[in-house]
Image (cartoon, rainbow, N blue to C red; front, side, top):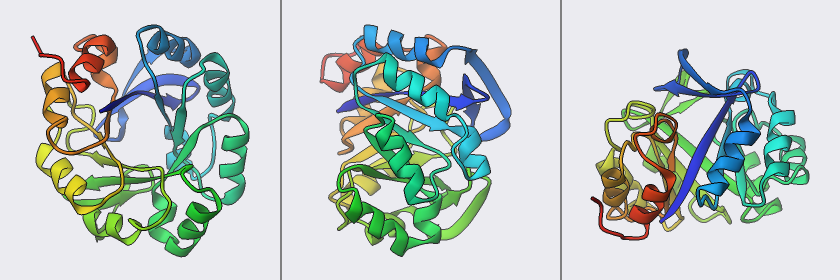
Length: 242
């Protein structure tokens, strides 16, 4: 199972939110590129980047910081947040981002999203953020009537790189992932599913390996030193958890 350490960007800094609440922010580092380099030094093989300002404002905001991160490391980086048109996708891919995560626009304009999947095969990730099983959009500020599984199945036949499934209730809370939701999603589609939200320890990573997901994103637990990246990687590879 892949481990994707998360770097959430707001105002050019590395931050974390609790349950997507912009009023519950913790700033962890003013130099996100340095954070990226440390993750690589600790064995990281992938990075998950989020432009929180972009997700809220509907446009790329932290592009300069994203470029600095991509230039600082030589591992695949994905970015989500604020990607609303083809020009944004091209800008990010040209900047060296390996794949882009799109959520809100996929729900609002499904045919446009399908066309982007086909134009950029295996470079687009469908981001589904769910609150009580329903898809949330616009930086989690709005909740739709569509179920997360239904949305995933709508796009399951497209040439997507992966599907990131975030359970908002667990995100940033360090109380464990929603294993039942992740298991349900992994069983519902043939796409690689990457779990996001709630990982607090190596045992959580080990439990996720039993759900059928292809990877998981870890944020706050790493920043608060409740879990080290080497321990997370070991658990993902099936090593006994102590």
